[in-house]
Image (cartoon, rainbow, N blue to C red):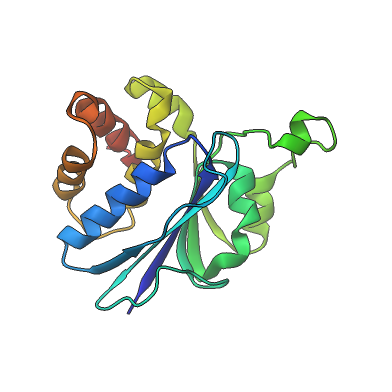
Length: 189
């Protein structure tokens, strides 16, 4: 049975590394894995989506509406934007950070209020965590992606050592220890 993970965020936040890391890990666990290219404005500030699909045999990297087992979101508004892709019983893992999109920056609209509770009121299971604070404590605001991966790892039956090995294999050596620290802080261990 194929499982689907959508990684959504804003360009420049590290969603590419997050999808590479989870794809690498799942391949090493013996799954067939398809990771999509980045869809959206990958320049800093634009909405970005990547898909990770894994299972015994995966034919396409694309996730349709109602198929995502997990939506991993770097920002609350991005989680809300893609909620229709979540399958019934799926889960959203979301950074509580707010990054204003251009219409908010220009003053055309205001940032929506109470997005987490609005998603929960739809019957969605939301695991919200302040990834930015944990990333900064680990040594870099850029490690939000690893904090999110740490949080996501709690929902997989894969030992933490294997996640750490994937970090070692996907992250430049000088950033490995800081990224492991961010990962573990997101995991809550």
